[in-house]
Length: 132
Image (cartoon, rainbow, N blue to C red; front, side, top):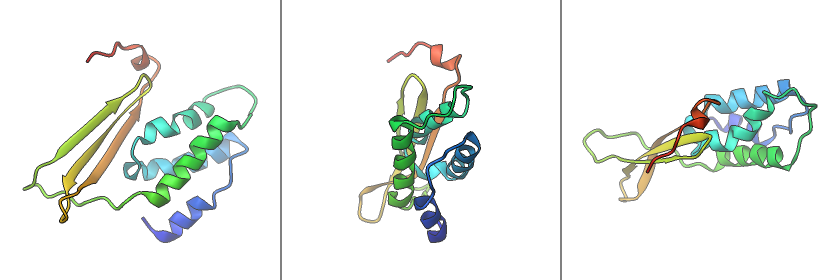
């Protein structure tokens, strides 16, 4: 990611309005493929944009906001996939989100992410039963 954009996200002030939060989430959503468990982390912030309640920035939202900012600057570069090598797919789900990481071994033999995907479930999907 562009170092200028990383600096910008680190200096992004906490939101005081839904419009400001939408702006931050719009930026984050564009780059969400670089963040593991993005939907789970951003879920409280997304819920805040759908409420008719008066704006009250609390610790839950502040933690999600700070965590996202920190993750953007600390994530390793994604490995360019090599279709001739073995892929490893790791998945996870909760009642409100699901996610996956696609790994491949790098030149040192260490697993490195090739990409992340995550999705927040809608109200109907949150009612689905979970099976092992």
